[in-house]
Image 1 (cartoon, rainbow, N blue to C red):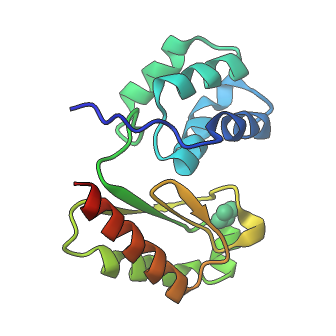
Image 2: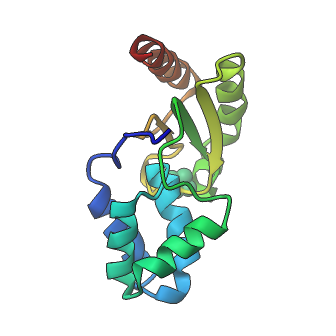
Length: 159
Ligand code: FES
């Protein structure tokens, strides 16, 4: 079943910034896709088109890489995904303590997933986490518990 969730608000700007980070080089497509997925959670058709235009490659090339690698998703995962950044800036600000908390909070909740990612583009406000595509900065344990519980309640209510 197709998940009808669109890319998060502001996605085109984020995609353009990520492509620029790699100087719009088509040879860095995989790195661009990893970073885009880390920020947006998936790389939908609209985003694939934006990436292709920015990197001056074809949509078929972008789609081909996404289809080939299991790591990439072209649709939002069902339910809510909690992404905990384990990039260098976030690690130095205590992110390593957040991942086990997120995993514990989501145990027994099949509609909430946890993923470790490596830079959400929010290093200045480390440690960073996204919950359901919303970016949170300077996240401490209590804050993480509150936002994950809130997201879980909202997700259950929407079923
Ligand atoms: S290292 Fe975590 S947001 Fe950049």
